[in-house]
Image 1 (cartoon, one colour):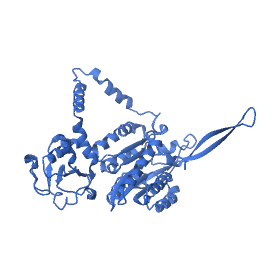
Image 2 (cartoon, one colour; image 1 turned 90 degrees about the horizontal axis):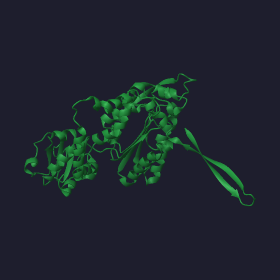
Image 3 (tube, helix red, strand yellow; image 1 turned 30 degrees about the vertical axis):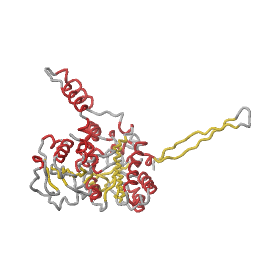
Image 4 (cartoon, one colour; image 1 turned 180 degrees about the vertical axis):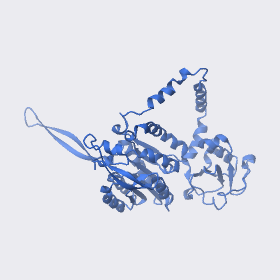
Length: 428
């Protein structure tokens, strides 16, 4: 394990002598970096994860994925805290360790057995295949990236690094299968990703597959400097847009995303094209005649939204409080198939115990908040709409007179919640 030496000087005056003699000794403690991932921010995410575990009850299973586990110290530390957090806490966390380095295989296999978890002696990737894995003299820099491994291998003295062929797993498919395949109700999901620059390949796949939307807490260690210079600009743009993509694209965005960006791994190296891109956007106005000022319109819209904060907060609050899945009688009522739609949108009245609304607004089709707001408006006009399910796949919303939101059935891209928020708040 990589260790850092933390030392403090303890001083003591001996009062029996004149002048007082000053004695000093040094107390040193070895601190494993793996336990201190991302510093205080990483600790906050773990604290929230364990707090969810305490509040979740015995019927919920939480998930802890450490991708690029190295020696496994971090996961072992979290699992020990889970064991202390509440009775049976560790038994309600499904631990998954992923690490291709054979030097750690025996240790990680034993750790997975101890915590009744799963260990994959493979590299995380976008599909199942075989890739070259480069071994650095500094094990934490061993990577699918030769640049990363070689940089920490004293390239001036050792211009080459040894490589081995390793199997890979489709990380997105594995996470989706693990979480959706669990028999018990789902608790929180924590993803720790430290893959030495492979994050720029993995995260787009995790995003488009929906795997990142499963996560409540995400801790990413970035390694921009290990990316080929020609790809760094795309990496910078993706890194700075990731939070926004998840916030807009997930029905239930992650509660906390932590970006661990060590200075040595992310700054101080050129990003080809960045200056040109910044100059292009900053100086374009000076070369365009008769250009309309979009800033005036944006200021007016911003002021308008400030005068109507309630409309935004109501819909957002419903989305944040909704739960993934559908009511137990969703399929029994035939709502999962094509069905004659209830005329609640036009008449404001509903029949039976459930029904379906069709959302046709162009704005709603392209924006999750607008889509949810349209569904909530139609629900407010339906006297029997006490619970609402939003299906992003079908672009429809379903209403129910009754629903046990504590026992929802799993259905991807669907969320369900009580329809009380818009009725209490009035206009949306």
